[in-house]
Amino acid sequence: MRSISKIVEKIIVTSPFLEEALAEKLINVSSLARKIRQEVEDAMGEPIKEGAIVMAINRLEPSYYYKINIGIKDFVNNIGDIIVRSSLRAYTYENSNTLIGSQKTLLDEASKNKKHFHTISQGIYETTIIISNSLKESIEEEFKEEHLITSKSDLSSITVKLPMKNTEVSGLYYYIFKKLAWAGINIIEIISTTNEFTLVVSDDDIDKAFSILMGLKKD
Image (tube, rainbow, N blue to C red; front, top):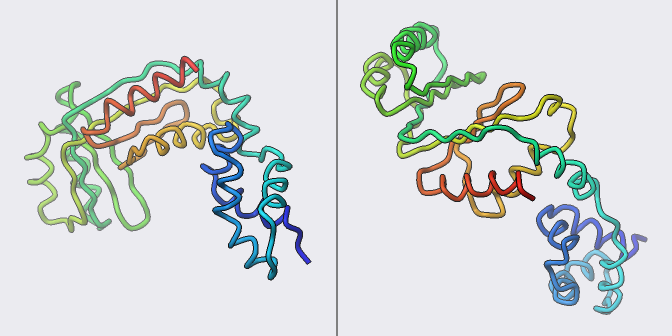
């Protein structure tokens, strides 16, 4: 028979935000115990006292995801430049035999002006292209024969330069994206290379996202 502690642990660790809020002492334990009491009782198949659940919560040890935050904080303090670009739009096309040729033409056009923002992410079935608004007519003309899956406008990007050896740090992206998710910021696209990553968000979220990323360097 499973113990109360094991059931409580399973409920909490399957909710990362809840787990970390507990670790940061942002949640009232008694209130949480009342909230999950019915779920614990259903799993145990018998009535459970609230006090027993409170005790089980208090005995929980920090999980892997919480423990890694300690080392990551020092690493994130050393992230490099944060660059913001605005006036962007994204197009997602179904992959085809002619798509690569269209991409080449677009890249040739974009390379004529260093101020143009352009990035291409190709998946198995579709390709997403993010460009400056100034390239709107070029892409829509060149890709008019391609199957457009979706498009979005009013976008901005934030590019973050990461310290070397970032690929050796476990949980780095989790730590960063968690902060953004807690703020209710919807990440529309993610573009990454070995030592930098770019987030694409709506214009409405760019100021808040930038503030959060800058705050990480100061925490």
